[in-house]
Amino acid sequence: MVYTLSYQMYKCEAGLSAAEQRAADVRAGEGAAAVRQVRVSLGRFFRPRRATRPGRRVTGRGAASMRLLSSGQ
Image 1: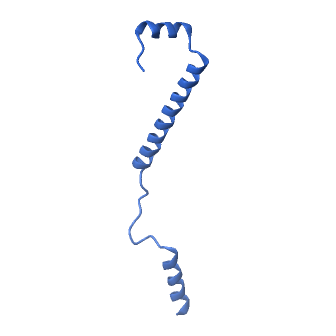
Image 2: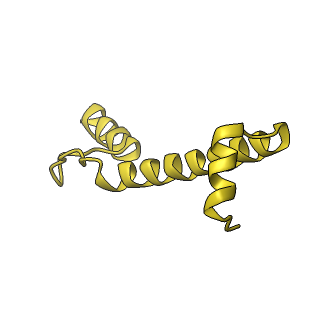
Image 3: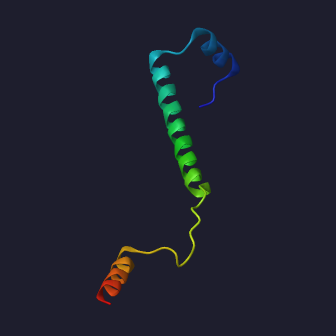
C-alpha cells in the first residue's frame, strides 16, 4: 500500500492504532522468519565439510565381517 507523504508524516507523529501495530508486528515476524530460513539454508550450504580419507571409513557391516574373519582363523 502506498501512502502520501503527508499521511506518512501524520502517522509518524500520531503513532499507529492497535490494529495497525498488530499488522506491522505480523509483517515484521514474517520477515524475520524468512531471513532466519535463508540464514539456515546458507549455513548448511557453506558449512565446512569434514575431511575423510576414502578407504579409512569402515561401516558397521564391514567391521562385523572383519571380526568374523579374524576370529575364525
